[in-house]
Length: 211
Length: 273
Image (cartoon, rainbow over all chains, first blue to last red; front, side):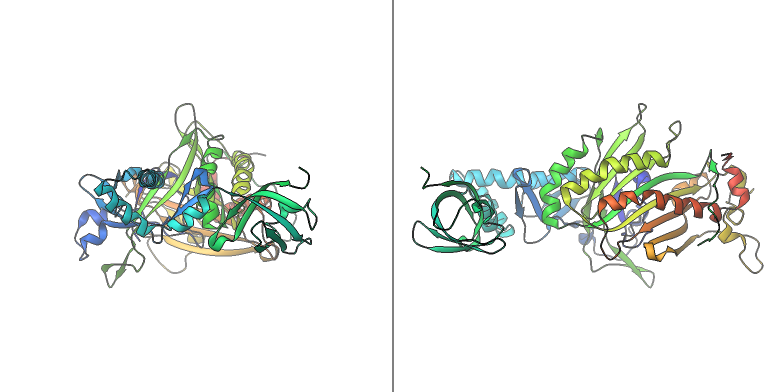
């Protein structure tokens, strides 16, 4: 394996112990150009990180595949395939921030219906690469709901009947905020929903009967 | 293992230690690591003044029959978040490298700033709990690594007339090589593992290898002494890993005494206890 290291190579951790990647720092091999290898492969790198923190890490923007970075040796820059992001190679550590910035910028324009024609092409390309459904669920504001606690035992799922008459079994961990309630108590709460309207979290519980 | 009473080992005024590193390898779910990455950076900057990320552009080539070919792994870019505490004259003294599956606390040996193991221990006790509280890692190994450099700068009296290093006079494992030969020459790359105390899950890796960076100033050899503690049946918490530092240090020091020849140790300037 050949690596180019930017930063402080003289302070690298010694790689000898088991499980460590054997990182060899040797720039001469690429400079020589004598090997019979496909040059295009030398310019395309994967960025292994597929989760990008949004809102200080409260939400993650997930890509289905690692991003592809296409390097241009002359300008010492790279572009991210399908994202219209160009950075200097030595600024690659800034890429997660730029990915989120690009995504949020286009999302804001899409919500405001102000995407230009080229923005639309860009946005569709990005939507093909990210799990937008999961992002939307994770980032959705909690819903105000009213319901009645039907049953709850410590360590067991709790049963709740919502105001629309539907019943939901809540995982014991999710139902923790309902601990002060007893079966039959009416309550209101802010409820975060996940895939298939599954209750992910409950907060700000108040008792309706006490009002 | 020795069953004799413990002896007081000498310390040295000029040991060839280039850096001391205490690392914890760990399993951390990617969701947790990336969700807390920014928070971790902020927390680290409360202890270190400088953030200098390192990056590696890995081509992942391998050689088959003398021909370089692409490995099945695609070329990739790795980022290591690196934080430094520097001396007033700008030299990197204590560092911390954070990777998705590892943290390393680095103590560098630099001229005019002679810091030793107690400094590494103090920083480890301060930084690792911060990392562990944010990422709740499952520790897979605690490693104390002493990298020793043998070169014209550290052992000038062991340089032959032709500029080569008299490695057979420095390292006991090379000194008694059987058979007849005129000398020992590069390449050097030897690794071995020692089971120090398997019941306590303590091991030691010894690696001797030639290093290219010092070619301009003659040949040089790096001798790594790495003491490891692996988890037992009940795992290993970050706090337990930090508590094992003294034991790992003793392991390294014990082996330092037997890996280097008496003549080499005299060159390191032993101090009387």
